[in-house]
Length: 264
Ligand SMILES: NC(=O)c1ccc[n+]([C@@H]2O[C@H](COP(=O)([O-])OP(=O)(O)OC[C@H]3O[C@@H](n4cnc5c(N)ncnc54)[C@H](O)[C@@H]3O)[C@@H](O)[C@H]2O)c1
Image (cartoon, rainbow, N blue to C red; front, side):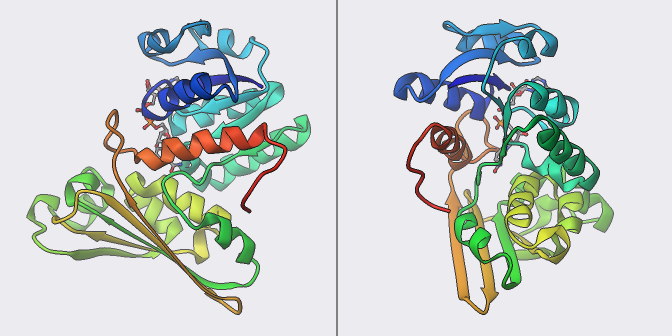
């Protein structure tokens, strides 16, 4: 499987190193807007100076591990040439972009892979999505990890002044992704796997005592109840990204080339 990677940061570099070490994919091309980051990982791969050079390379799958802007700018062009594995899943909270990307995949007969990323439980959530009555994602983070979220300006709250465990937000995933863009990938993955952005409830809790990012997915319906808790250690290269997200990307890429795929 010939793979190209856009974005050579925390997730991209884990993918490239794992593919070389384990041999499940041949990394043929790399592109990063900071070209030196791609050069550092290059070995035998072609290092593109711009997207047009990158997309000219013959590839089976392109991995996007860059940004939501990269998804907006490149996804449709990628789908004309290759399948797409996307890490910046939060970009799909925009219905118009989601529809465009889905149309491009259909037109070109391509597949789009969205790894579970930093959250567990999506396998079971996918299975029960047609019969789930309630999906609640509760995210706990240190207030420092939530800094910069538009929520704080809108409600006049200073994250430095949060002293104990505090429920900051409770509402739909659709509202949550606007107020807390830092949580957007997990909220988007849960919404897309389950019952959508409007019916999925999100709770954001700030807790100055914790250093990890904790996501709890709770699903109820006629099938029973699912509770999946993930206690995430941040990636060393990018503290905003959980190490699990990179591992999940590697697993998804491995699945593409496997004859037996375990799990839903
Ligand atoms: N699905 C999930 O659960 C999950 C979890 C963590 C991160 N993410 C997302 O994955 C993406 C990558 O995360 P990361 O931690 O590796 O980030 P990072 O900042 O460590 O690396 C991203 C790299 O992409 C490059 N880049 C950004 N925009 C680009 C563009 N338009 N064109 C070319 N290169 C570009 C940057 O220069 C950087 O080197 C982010 O969008 C992040 O939000 C998803």
